[in-house]
Amino acid sequence: MNSDQSKPVSSANVSGQLAGHSEDSDNPFAAPQTTELNYSTRADQDVERDGPPWEVHPSFITYIRTMTLVLFQPSRMFLNMRLTGSWILPLVFAAALPTVVAILLSVSMILMFPQEGNPAMMLLIIPVPVLTIGIGLASISLLLHFALRLFGCRQRGFEATYRFCCYSFGALIMFDFWPPGWIWQLVNLTKGVSRVHQISSSKAFAAILLASTVPGLIIGVWLLYIR
Image (cartoon, rainbow, N blue to C red; front, side):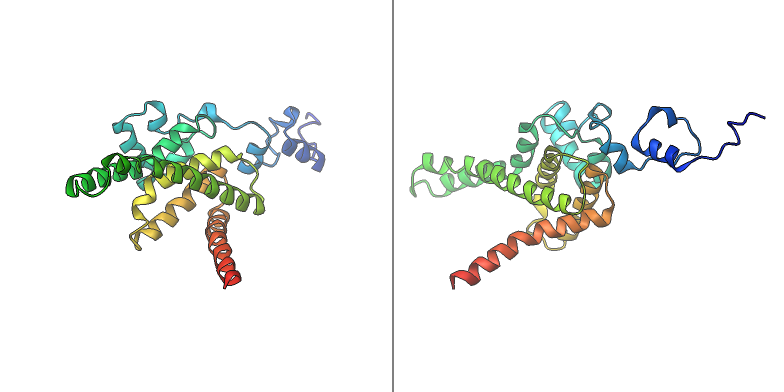
């Protein structure tokens, strides 16, 4: 009998497997790599991700398809979302619905109250949602990414968090003014963070909760300070 077959597996061999050494890659006794470790030892696998339909071919149809994926298939959506790429397309997706609402409101005000104010000035309100959403998403992404780092999630870069926030906000904003929809938001956000950052749902939920409460705490402390 070949002595190599009966040779016990040493802890050094297992450590070598976890470190990514190619000589142990075929060892059937080696401990399997976890998902988080796998992603920490090589570049993001965007080549295996097709991206949401909106990024493949931006159009009204792909916008609706992407929104449907975020709302009803968040796991599939964010497992397939590219982790790097254009910063503009995700932002356009997030700002599309608020911008359309702003246009409709401006046009309605002009038609209903033609004598009130300057129509041109009303139309200037349209870019406001885009600027507000852009600044807001950057801030939310920073808070969420910082919270993820506090929980030891370092597999993905800030760009992945930013892209996740853009697509989530763009689809889930319709639930902001419907309290029962907040639970739907929380479930979808937890699934999305978990899939994008390859972490457990408990860590994803904790990071979202922390990122959501920090602004409220800051505002509360500021209000107490100025009193």
